[in-house]
Length: 419
Image (cartoon, rainbow, N blue to C red; front, side, top):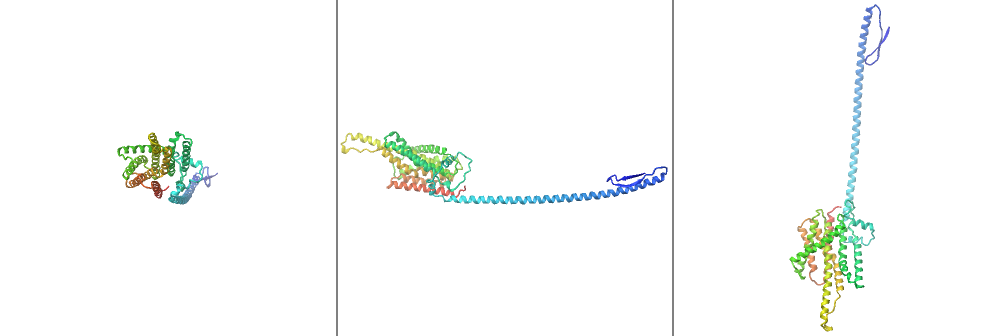
């Protein structure tokens, strides 16, 4: 009988063996021993073969791992190179943006007085007007700063509106003889130039972080409180009606201190104030002070002339016609006063307080530099009040000097400021 023998590990057939049965045990034993020897030998050969196979498998696995590691390194290196190239592109883009910004900064350095009028005679839409007036309301608005940002125009429209209202009231007062319109003529006449300048200061604050509502509050409250503080100082240091150099100097220092005290108080509430903020805050207080003062002077002129006419009429009743006093037109005198004061107000309190506000906002404290600008305003004010020949020519020159200083302050600020 023949049986097939297989390897127990790999399953391969080893040999076919004849299995003897019967009484011949000797032959069976020898045959059985021979089969066992063959089985061991084949088994050893099989194990050696399997060992070599495993070694080859391990070598192949190591080679595969090495290839995979090399592949991962190449992928990492490629990714790193791509990342470096991306960073280089981003750096180049940032550099281009910085160069562009530098060009924009340089363009603003050419500010001059003509920029205050370049946009005045151009046509503007209601959308542009609303864009200006919404300043301080939309706080997170990103607005591009350009040279046109320093070219105000809305103030000219405000001037036209106020001037039209003033002429309307004048017609009612002079042509129709309605004396009820006299207070309106005084107030609007005093308001025409100062309020127009207030709008200009508002436009020049390109940071757009102060609302027009707040500006109106500073204009009214700041102007009124500074005027009241001035009256307190007059009570302590009376100057009278003396317009000599000494008297004019006393008036000047009292009124400038009265205004600048309120200007400093408001600016100290915001430590981040710039020259443009100081220009607006100081200008608003100066404009309010000028309006109330001019309206008061116009009213006093009317009362003084009216009082003179009343007393003249009482005396004339007892005098012959050739000795009688002539009567003066009190309304005409009031109109002349309000007209002159309004026209010249652009270089008076409205400008001096703006200069002081700009100086304090720049220095952030009362130091020597600030005191220099305060002294300049004090001198301008004293010369304004002192009696001199060619008074109106003097006042006109002082107005242009004050605005020359304001333009200089703005230019100096733009030279050292980036937007």
